[in-house]
Image (cartoon, rainbow, N blue to C red; front, top):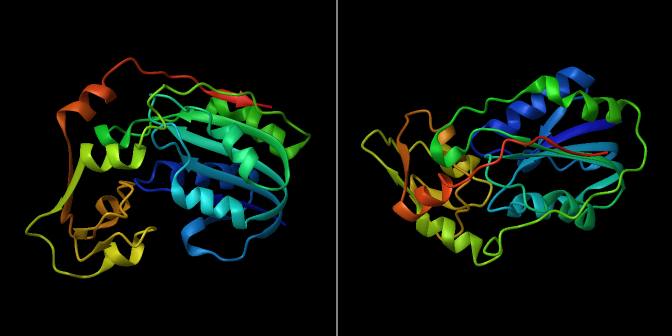
Length: 226
């Protein structure tokens, strides 16, 4: 059995996973809501955080049991770093292909603007699998300098008067980092709580240095590893 797994905060990686699901006729699963990790081929879709793999994705790769693996990473046009090679190193299974897909950045409230037509080579590789070899990517020199702390300082999440203490944010948080709208130190700023709140009771704000970082030179490259 082949499966598509995804991790998504703001919903962009989820949309890409559903596109692959439709094109390949393979069911997709949220990695934070499934424990059935045995599969023949696993296609994993995830966002790039500070040019690195998100914590829930790293944990998932360590638990996944797949004969073949393929990766699709979404990035906010800044940099995809070295995430495909990192994913290959952590996960088990034969690597058959990868792609880094540009999309709107969540911290800039941009739409995902995927160009699905460009993804045909990756889809064809899944249909006709063979061993692939990841290229070593390049990170900015500060990418690994306390990325979680930088993000927590640069992006603030607050609840507004719409909060009715329904508990949906706590239920959906992949890190157990929020309770009734109050964020704790485990938050990775995936923004799932903001996106999923039924009352629109959560808002985020980027501080000046984060805005400057996000508005610097950006990429729009679809990078394949086939």
